[in-house]
Image 1: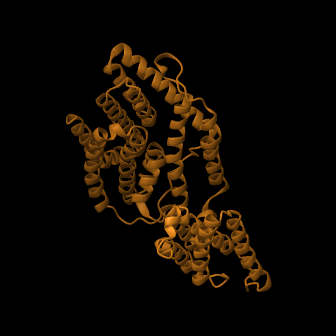
Image 2: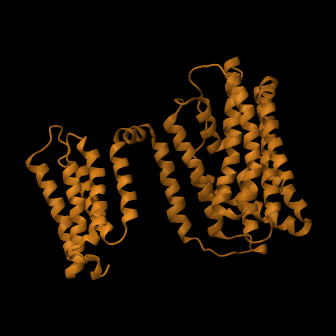
Image 3: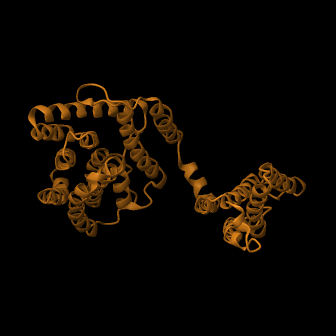
Length: 420
């Protein structure tokens, strides 16, 4: 920012200071509600403005050390206030001290040209401060196993992934260690999100949420569990049908999201096909939901940790094998060979063939139409497998309850394929 910024007695700098003032007031409003906090609305507003003011002065006189001096001064003053006037509940005030330092730093950010980032961070900071009870409740509901899952995902993402070579090896250039592990991270991340959310929410929000989160983690495991419980009573039978249908439809949403992340160019063709399946399925699910009785507490899907290293390695190996088979059979037998692989692998796992098809599309081994068809065939094969499992475990009555929904979903997907 040049010297012209301060023309007209510096009035041109007023927008930056108003932004800083707004940021300080936003964070300060939340702290004002906390009786143990030594800083409230006015203090946060002043600290944020001070950050912008010191940044301006430091720039004009060429003394960047003033920014550090201001930061230390703010920290020293608030810490001293807690030492000389402790709160009744012995709150050490670390949260308020940190929030004040953030307000100061955001004021600096505003002056150096990052106003939008500063506002976003201010909103995020206020949200974290305001939802303290909810965040504490979440951490208390997480078990040691859940925390291990999060740590394992961090290892998969931030330790293993960066050290892998981003280079293609083998026939057809099918094996790229970085790309293969990126697929592992993507699927593990989606599954972990559903797994943790399922652990946090439990049975509190009923069948729709259990079906959604169960499908996000594993629609097959969810189908297996509720097929077992469907024999308890008539109410549980109808509930099981609803949860199984919802979990199966979540797979459609997962496939659209994954495709959008990996290969956005194919989403415009894949989304309408999956969307029709989802629309038809929702109609059938709504019919079953309307007839569902309130049966009280619902059983939780028995899902395994989706981020365990051996599980991640297993999926990575499966992805590479399916990718090689798909590339090889496409080369020697055309699209027919690919579709055979899609049907066979889709019986137990849709993700591997879906990611493989997207990868082959990216390296121009498949057309977008071939990739969409292979993903849809894998999904339909997986639905057939789950229907057979539900019928064999839950019996004929459960099969009748989910048959209409499964047929509706499959019909929607097939209808969508006709318009490719």
